[in-house]
Image 1 (cartoon, rainbow, N blue to C red):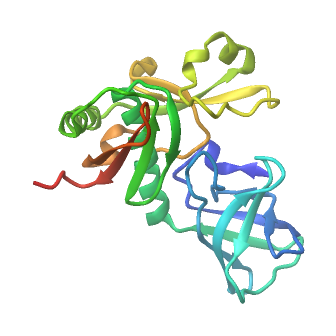
Image 2 (image 1 turned 90 degrees about the vertical axis):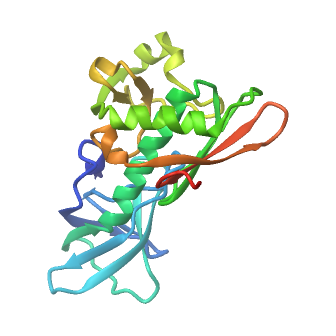
Length: 241
């Protein structure tokens, strides 16, 4: 299965062919623009348009036994396609774009707060990152630094390195508990700034192409989760007065 979103996060519709309909109803295609739940980012929703015009509503997208196996989960009561038939994929673009903006905001926060990451979760309106840190930090100061990066409109792009390159540069991995998957011969980096001047880290998620697309964001709350763990809540819009 070809994961089209890996190279083009802005691809919201594309043609595909059904390869398998699983016993649990999950649909597998020869290629997909639907992102599957991974790395704290939820899987895409949307629909498949059959050649007869019927729609199969997709309520979620997950991975199977490996990251390369992407399963489209139909909502209850949907038509069941047959293996071999063609379909046009349509992701819920508004939802996906908000997740792209928010996931990018999480990367920016990891630049402003350069501490090991112990957990993260991305949603459409409110996301969190947990850092291994004991320092006290002002949320207004963090918000101001985030908006500096957003307003500078740094380019965002991906590049590939080998597993050996990653092993030689372990500081690229910011997560304390999760390591990029091995055995695929190459690692995808998400880079921010000309020549990766702002940031570069392994990530398989979807992101916007310029930091200005993130829009206005703020730190809504910083929670203490243990002696050396702080949870930062990122929210869209201006900080409340």
